[in-house]
Length: 535
Image 1 (cartoon, one colour):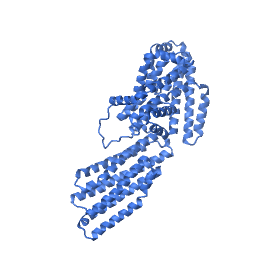
Image 2: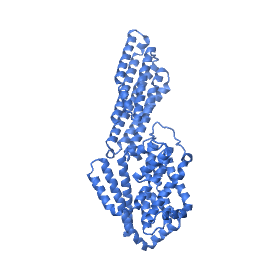
Image 3: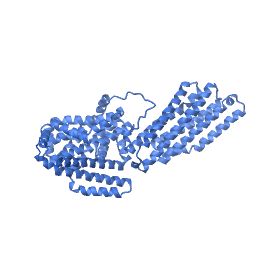
Image 4: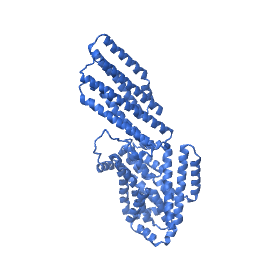
């Protein structure tokens, strides 16, 4: 019983060390991970390299796949762009197992002490995260030491010997065991750490260990499959691709497990190193085999997982995902994508204003009002999503981005309200009273509306691209817009003094339209200020 408790304790320490180290490095790198993944996904080889590098750092291919699911759900990447990264993540995960195979167990207390000291003393977030990463590495090797010290007594346990011999004699049992254990502990590296310890004591033959390696690679996909439940079809395809590569790779290796084991035996004399090499060779092998066929694999998976059938409901968020709340950088990216969708709706509402005033298009007027309900819904949902973000996990840069984003969606919502509650009411009044603007007056309204629309389009582009120069250009237009609105009012008063009948009939509506367009222009300027402060 003492041996079993020690083994479970060592396994728990090993697993916790892997997670602590990976999560700490993920926090320390922050948005750089997203930039690396999204920036290098255009070409297959660079995508493989970025996936391998990221996974080697955060020590989990499942975590990398979860990030990809989040990015695809947020619209930051396409499914096809993730295939090379998934194959690269399979290579990167071998780094942790190779590290475990070195068995730096004698140095685990030193690593734990240094990591704790850095975490306790550091005041800045990045050094503190690096200290936690070092602490996690120390706990990893401490857990491995605890397992190694307590595996030897199992030699005298007939049940343990029968189970381990059964794994060695039947590859199917080994694959199943590795898959189940890896799925339960959500880490293939932790499962293989246990296999390394058994092999080191001669309890697990190499051919059985190879079967466990194949199973562990399959079992680690369970995390991504679980995370993709309820996600978009594109996100589900990422999880399906992850497990498909592993299953097909294992299916190719199992018939040749004997020759594969013979090759591994020649690579090193240490059983632990042989198992680590099996993990490395398998994952590099499936990447080399499948990389040329990723376009074909994409088409097959797209056929297997069809597109979402539901329509684009105006009262449904499309990009924000509560599962990303523990990753502030990803969550803010999703909220930004949703805010851009909101901006598109507002821009479309403003674009339709002249059509409503120029025609008896009552259906369009009501449609613009319905779209404001959509804008209000999105503003509320984005704000609630941001409110659930943990501010303790955000640095000052992400904090500024969050504040800027709240300001952006607030100004967009105000523009939508002005269009709905003011301009549409003026349009309804003109329609019901059968009023008609003078040709000169209508031309001036269209001109001013075009200037406001152009600035809104430019500020949305500046927001999408984080373009400080473009935002500044919009802000510099404030004085021009104010002066032009005054000139147009003066021009309208001139027509009134001239006694133009059409101008007299529509004077109230005309001046109110100019006033509300000016109010929209003020919110556009506020949007530009938010972008400048955020950048």
